[in-house]
Image (cartoon, rainbow, N blue to C red; front, side, top):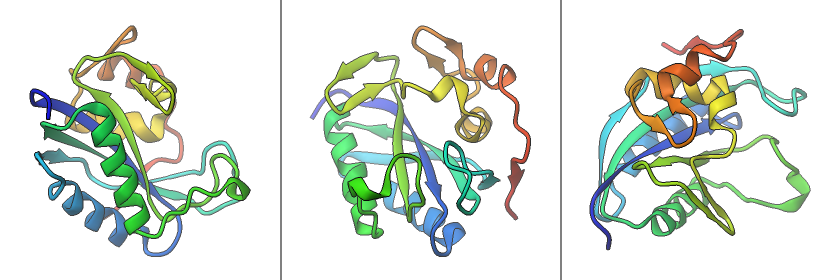
Length: 165
């Protein structure tokens, strides 16, 4: 176990009852070992990104305080995805429909570039569906090499993103 860090996780779903899935996934994040949920954003309905021939997504962001190392946290997130029925199969292709997607967006102010682990998330600064909920809970968080979440959020268009009641 490493020293406690604040980590930010992006959540998304567009298969099944996505609102329910994200609410349950946020609760599950609080149950990860050596981890506690600090804050979660509202849920946002967002247009599909990359592949548009699929249902809209519901997205959110969560702030965690964790004693897990970045790699261990990523593995725990992948385990939660599997627990919610996510199968990362090659035939799904990139950006396809999913029951639950959990992305490790930021881990403290660390910049990590290892096989299978890239923090900050490589496309964080250009994706409104991530930046809108993240800016809600952590506008001053720093994206290494990119400035603050707020600055990145201002730089991207957010057409079609709406809060879910």
